[in-house]
Structures are given as structure tokens and as C-alpha cells.
Image (cartoon, rainbow over all chains, first blue to last red):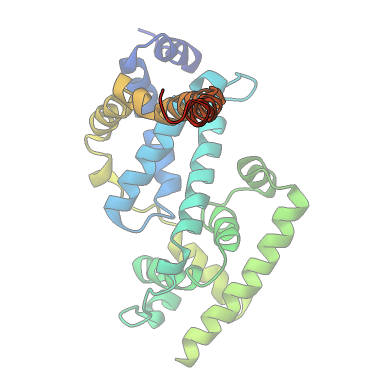
Amino acid sequence: MHEPTDERLIQSTLAGDDEAFASLVRRYRARVFGIAGRFARGDHELDDLCQEIFIKTYRNLGKYRADAPFEHWLSRIAVRACYDLLRKTRRERGYLPLEGIDVVAAERGDGRAARELLDWALARVSPEERLVITLLEIEEKTVREIAGLTGWSESNVKVRAFRARQRLKEVLEASHER
Amino acid sequence: MNDEQLNKLFQAARAKPDTSRVEYGFETRLLARLRTDETPWFALAWKLVPVFVAVVVSLGAWNYAGTTDLPMAGNADDSTLAAYLTGGRL
């Protein structure tokens, strides 16, 4: 049996079928969690953020024009929600302590320690810098994809990425001095 | 820190974080929230409160303006004049 297309599920959702929306959520849940998981701190924030993303999607479903795949449209909503979260929680994130993070293990290539050290360093750069570094260097998106996701121009993405990298290096160098 | 060290750090951090615990039962929680978030009629009534207040204030103002426009003061003046002319007998 064929799976219903995204368009079909969207039409059904707009006609009031919540189960059709649940099917859409199941189809793209991993994608949204993959993006949000890079920015949320802990399970609770991740759950809230993903719910926020799908609620925005549900409420704006009528505005979706099928000129781009639904997945791209949803990813844009997800990236914008993550960016909003970074801006809202910027001050709190700055208090993340360096103590307890194994800097040596992180630099040796230990995944968990590397993520913790990067989290600490990324909490000390601007939300724009954090977003661009995460999408470019960790999610390995292209400049064009990032431009599509954020609404920034490609040259703007390049400039922000360059500055973000420089800033991150400074922050990480400072962590060595501690 | 040089570029090579930074790239190594990025590479180590690329592994997808495990989100399976939060994904469990996600649709159920989401649909429940969507259903409770749908705007009930009494929430709309609350949104109309400023309109009701504006209507009440306008009616009050109109009523006040209407009462002060009535020739009350004129009547009072006439009564005083009549009392004076009739030697206090009205």
C-alpha cells in the first residue's frame, strides 16, 4: 500500500483530520529532532522546542505553497525556532561553567567531551554565530542551504561563518588559559 | 587554537545526539497540546473585553454629555429669578 504524499496529508490536516497531521509529524520527527537537538539544553527544552516547531507548522499549514518540498519549509521553521531560542536564552547560556568539561579529552576527539566543550564555547558567541557554525561545521550544510534556511544572503552567511570561526577560536584559546 | 584543532573538535562533535527518549510518545503529547491550545469561545470573549470597555466608556461619556446639555442650569436660574420676583413664593 502506498504511503499518502505530504500534500495529501496537508490537505487532510487542513480539512480537520488531526491523525493526518500526526502522520506528518511521524514522517519528519527525526529531521526536526536532529536540528533542535543541536541547540536545546536537555530533554525538557528539546521536547518544548520540538512541540513549538510543530505547533507553528500546524498553525501555518494553510500558508504552505507546494513550490518547495514540505521538508524544506518545515526545516526553515525549525531553524528559525532554534534561532529564537538562542536569542531568548543567551544570557542563561553564558553561565555554563567550564569546570567539569574534559578539555584534553575533547581535543583528543572524544565525542561527548567535544560536544560539551563546543557547547561551552558556543554559549560565548552571538546567536547568529552559533547558528551558522552549527549548521555549517556540525550539521555540514552548504552555504546555499544555510541561506535558504535562515533567509540570509549567501555572502552574508560566508561573512558570518568566517567571523564566527575567528570568535570561536578566541574563546577556545581563552579556555586554555584558565 | 589553530584551524586543524578546531576542525578536529567539530568532527568529534558531529555525532547525532541521542533524542530517542524525548521522541517516545511525542505525537501523543503534541496532539494533546494542540487540542488544549485551540481557542475556546470564552478565550475569544476575553479578547473582546477591551471592545466592551470602549463601548461602556463611550456610552457613559455620551450620557454625561447629554445630561450636561440639558437646560438644568437655565431652569435653576429661572427658578431663582421667579423666587426673587415673587418674593420667595414659588
